[in-house]
Amino acid sequence: GICLITPGGKLRQKLVETRVRFKRLPREEIDAYVASGEWRGKAGGYAVQGLAGSFVVKLVGSYTNVVGLPLYETTALLAGEGFKVHASWLTARP
Image (tube, rainbow, N blue to C red; front, side, top):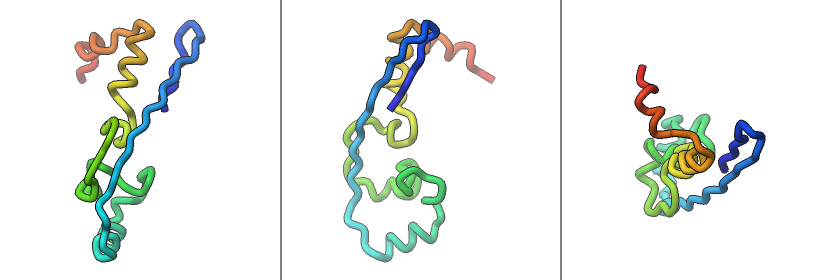
């Protein structure tokens, strides 16, 4: 979910649901993934953009939500409150 408190103190929130289906995993693949250590520090024990991405047979919803922040919905929420999200791209360069 996303939560935004506007400068005027209004609370805006959005729930984003994403469904991820894994293939049926044989014990050998599970053991290899656990041994890789990639699961450490990951919500849900995997990173869709990493090794476990090869387990995904279907993703319905927001890919960026699975990664950690639903970008489309976040920028829409900010833009809906008057923030010029895309204009900031011009000044956000290092």
